[in-house]
Length: 170
Image (tube, rainbow, N blue to C red; front, top):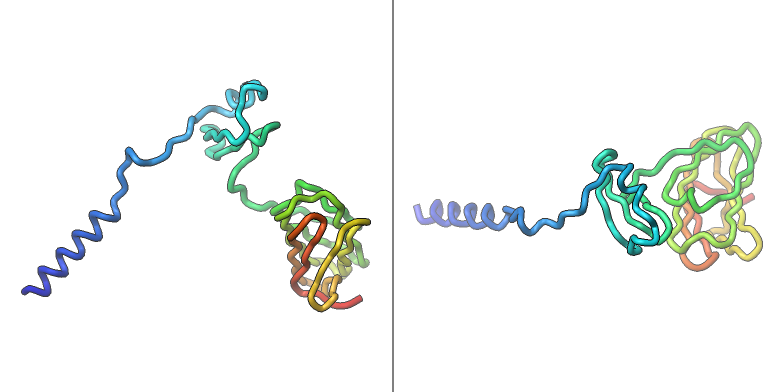
């Protein structure tokens, strides 16, 4: 009987601790997309947050524009040579080409820039850096290994990128 009583007390204590006080939740201002876009940029503090009640998403002001927080990656198909751009960050690029293509990493992408690429055609993808960019791989492999190969590219320092995945030497 004593064990049952201890078990009940333990259960009650855990249940009481797991409840959240609704008054302690952080609330964000909620506005429609139209209202958010009509706020003069000069009046918004960088880092401000708002909940878009039309899109059901949270946005942060970066000093110039509202950017969606916690966005899901998008998939973009490429069929030829391609140079990464800032908006590729956190997205997925598929390369569907019958012949080999080159993916160029330019200077100026932010530290933490992260993109995934996949070879979905027969053409292999060679990863190279523009002048001033260092591309690193432990085994000096910079070309996708074949059909359905996947590769991750991450900027770990200014103009320094690490490449990992299903790669082979030229």
